[in-house]
Image (cartoon, rainbow, N blue to C red; front, side):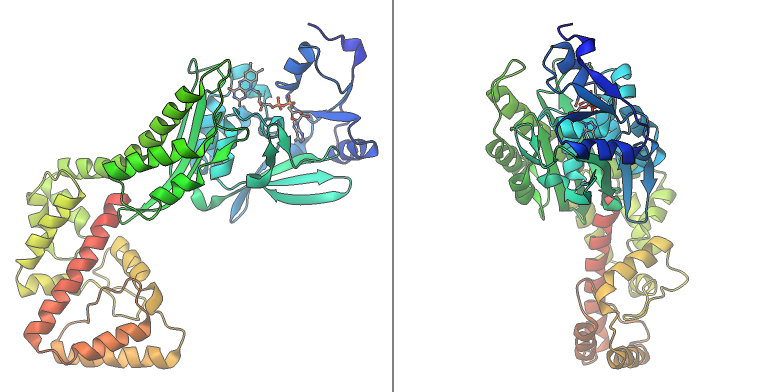
Amino acid sequence: MRADPSDYELVAPGSLATVVSLLGQSPGEWLPIAGGTDLMVVYAAGRLSVRKLVSLWNLPELRRIEAGADDVRIGAASTYTDLQQNEIVQNEFPLLVATARCTGGIANQNRGTLGGNIVNASPAADSLPALLVYDAALILISARGERRVAYNDFHTGYKKTLLAQDELVREIVLSRRYSRYSSYFRKVGARNAQAIAKVCVAALARLDAGIVSDIRLAAGSVAPIPLRLKLTEEVVGGKTIDKALIEQARQAAINEIRPIDDVRSTSRYRSAVLGNLVVEFLEKLAGEKSARLAHWNRLPAKDAAHEVLDCCGSGMWARLLASRRPFADEASLIAASDEIWNALQPPDWKEAFAKHPRIGEKNAPASASPQSAAWSSQEQKRSQSPDSQVRAELAEANREYEARFGRIFIVFATGKSATEMLEILRDRMQNDEESELRVSVEEQRKITNLRLRKWLDK
Ligand SMILES: Cc1cc2nc3c(=O)[nH]c(=O)nc-3n(C[C@H](O)[C@H](O)[C@H](O)COP(=O)(O)OP(=O)(O)OC[C@H]3O[C@@H](n4cnc5c(N)ncnc54)[C@H](O)[C@@H]3O)c2cc1C
C-alpha cells in the first residue's frame, strides 16, 4: 500500500444533515465515501489527494428503496446486493438486477453502491447504461437545498459530472412506465465475473402489433461517457424487425460510438462487439414473438382454439385456425386467418360481430372475454367523445343500424374519432344487406389481424 493511513481523517456523523453541512463548510475539503470500493483503490495506489473523508455508509436515508404510484426512488447508498434483493427492483427494473449481478464479486456487491458508481463516472461502469435507458433522474442535495437533474445530462465529459463539490447524490428516481418492456443487458469482458467491460449494452423496447413502438438503447465503454444510442433508436423505431432492419441498426450503432484503443481492448473490436450486441437484442425481441407462436403450435387443439378467440369471436374460425397449425411465422398465421375468415358462413361472421361493444359504448357484451373487452376499449379510445350531442347521435345511429341490419355496426375503430365513425355509419346505412355484410366482414378481418399481432406480442 502506497498511502499512509495516518495522513487521512475519516468521520462518520450518522446524520445526513450533518454530512451535508460539513460538505458545505469548505467545499472540496471533505470527500464523501460510501462503500469505498472505488476510493480505496485510489487510496491504496497513493493517489487519493483529498485527506478528509466523510462516510455515507451509516445513513439510513440514503439506503431506502421506496415505490410511489409513478416512480421508484432508490437511495444512492443502496448496494448492489440491496438492489438484487429488492422485490420492486426485481419485478420492474430487471436491468438493474442484471447489472448488479455482474458488478465485481459478492464482496464488492455487498459494499459497492449505485450512487458511487454514478459519481465515479467511469465510462465502463455497468449500471450506467441501464440508468440511461430507464430515463433516471437524480436528486442532488447540499446545504443550499435540493435539485433534480436528468441523468441523461449528468455526465458532461470523461469523468466529469454536474455534481458540485458540496453536493451528494441523494436518490435515483426511476419511472415505472418501462416495467413491461422487453429488456436486454449484456456485458462483454475478459471473463464473465470480476472483469471491467470491454463493451456493455442495456436496452428496452416495446412491440405493438409487430412494430417497434419504442426502443431505448445505451452502451458503456464506447465513448468518454455512457452513451444513449439515439440515432440507432431512430433507425429501428416505428418499424417491423426483419433482417434488413437488423443490419441497418448494426451499422447505425457502430457509426454513432467513439471507442478508443486501451489496455482492455481495441476500438475495432469494441465496434464489432457493439454491433453484435445490438443485433442480438433485436433478434431476441423478434424471437419473443416466435416463442409465443411455437408454444401455441404445441397446445392441444381445443386450448389453441380457445386462446385465439380473443382475437376473433367466431368459434368456427378459431377451430379451423388451430387445425392448420403449425405456423412458421406471423405472416403465415395471418394469411391462414384471412383465408379461413373469408370462407366462413354468415352465422359464423355474425357470431364474431356479436362479441364487440357498440361503437361509442364502453361495455363489451358479457360473452366477450376480458382480453377482448380490453382490446375493444383500446381500439375505441378515440370514439369516446366528450361532446354529448355526438354521443347521442352515435347512439341513435347505432339503434337505426341495428333495426335495419339486425346486428351491431362493425368498423375498424383504431384511430377514428366518434365524428368520423358517425359519418362512416351513416354512409353505410345506404348499403343493401349483401354489400353491408361484406363490408362488415372486411372490417372484422382488419380487427382480427391487428389483434393477432397484439396477441403474438403479449
Ligand atoms: C474488485 C472490484 C471490482 C469491481 N467491479 C466492477 C464492475 O464489474 N462494474 C462496475 O461498474 N464497477 C466495478 N467496480 C467499481 C465499484 O465497485 C463501483 O463503481 C461501485 O459502485 C462504487 O461504489 P462505492 O459506494 O464503493 O463508491 P466509493 O468508492 O465510496 O465512491 C466512489 C466515488 O463516488 C463518490 N460518492 C459515493 N457516493 C456518493 C453520493 N451518494 N453522492 C456523492 N458522491 C458520492 C465518492 O466521493 C467517490 O468519488 C469494482 C471495484 C472493485 C474494487
